Image (cartoon, rainbow, N blue to C red; front, top):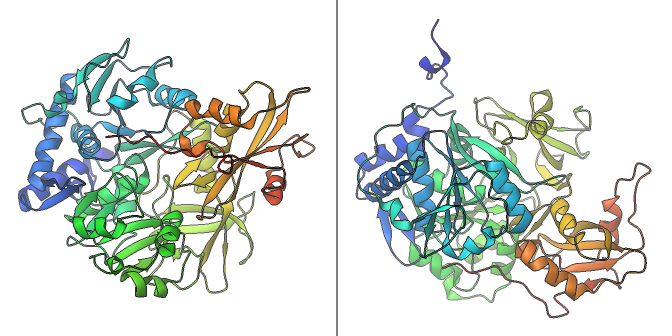
Length: 540
């Protein structure tokens, strides 16, 4: 009887490796179109497909020289740019697993992710190195430091960035890289516990990158304005690699000069999150609004009239629904009309809206969206080293998104709320659990509950309700100062409210819907009104 591995292409739903696995896909394009640009960077520099393959081979050789092999996890702690792509493509070239982590991580959150990932090698930006001081480094033994030298990381053996430009081609890995092998582990914010690492195969990334955007082709250039440590950055890169198209890598979205960036990079497509759309549409009209080559954009969520947006900016709008664990099961056609909708199920996926017992609710009622696909491996295959969370999410053979949805009379799907109390601010998912854990470390705090409240920019702001210990008085400004070095800037709450007791059920679960309903009350302290505004660290 032949082994499973010996008959990989018997299922027509599974594309061959040179159509979905990074190493053979890149090798194919480098042979077919060596001089075509694949990546353009903010400083105007470019990589052709041939150069990109050379960079991947050099990085792979360097990683292999310090013992990285196929199947190993390689952590990447880098801002958007050449080095982030270099590490990703080099690791996958070896058959290793790319494990990017958020550049805002610090403290216990950083320690948890490092401990969970069980990587031996981390590649990091020199400006981030001090955050490793004083935390448990888990299984890490080696660090490759870019954009700096002379960094001391205590027990870790430090290598200079030149290691990633090692000469020599890398031989094929000992084991053939198959479409169902792990491509990445991407950490997504926890909602009822610590952050979880999503195991993603090449087929999962392919399914998220190819199927939901049939309107893209090899003439498109995807503007990467979201981080490469998020699925919002990795999927766009892979979308264009699969098509033989190109990407423009930027450090992030900037409303001032956005359309100039689009024009300068030759970009034809991008993702626009709610806060981006708000800033663009509220900016004064300018001739720059149409002096660019952007042909289409993916707006998530669908928050403005698409015809008005197209009339002003000249690009066709689409929308969709996705999360790190799935592969955009809902998508729209061009110029959707129903604000707040996410589209409808695409070909190859099944979705249901169910109650707490996985029984389907009536149309129009709210329930949890669950998903499965007809392509093997087209969704995540679990949470890394977290069997309990994997079983919970995959119960009854469906992936449970944890998001509340409803279907309208026309069959459009509408996102209603995050059933797990996650908060989304400035394009980042925030774990209320992690916010509460850090607030509770401040002297005088007995317990805390974090919830989302509306932001004037769309998405959410963070409000934390705090119960003080008997006889204690909380100085909000000192609490903010306590939180800043312990969490990413976007997680630090804007609003603080003193409360005598948290509203709870008879089983002592916090009734967060009551706190959300009350919102920003007259006695709520606003740190921004108090002059405390936080910004992310700018990495060179």
